[in-house]
Image (cartoon, rainbow, N blue to C red; front, side):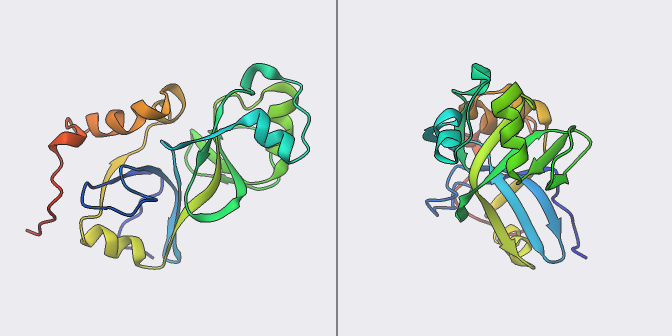
Length: 186
């Protein structure tokens, strides 16, 4: 088991992290075990809306209410695969209950439900995910690549993508400009 568990936390990329996939990223950690971690970047909308994505996978959109929602770049792993972060509830074929408030579903049935009746309505649909092997995220934390804060479903589902990172930082009482791009160790 890991020394700490980042499930249901946000990872905030420190300014020194220049990797183009993760610079200024806000990642919601869906699972963190001794085998590694899985998260979804929640502040990187793609130039693709939900209606276009559903059309590409041959799902007919009956409910137009969510059709214009953006699809997100969830991370560089399995970018051809879709993931749906949503408020907990509903029964889907492949769902990971992250917390009492948030779940991650990777099965097509959730997309069918969204297209048909708009439920679940509070969703973040991503292509790809961010993944770490056993011990990798711990090593990156030790190198000061990430700052962590407890996640909030309200930040995920009630704010536009450009407001999520500042809101997560605000839970610590700081802004991105206050973070140093020089890593230090006490």
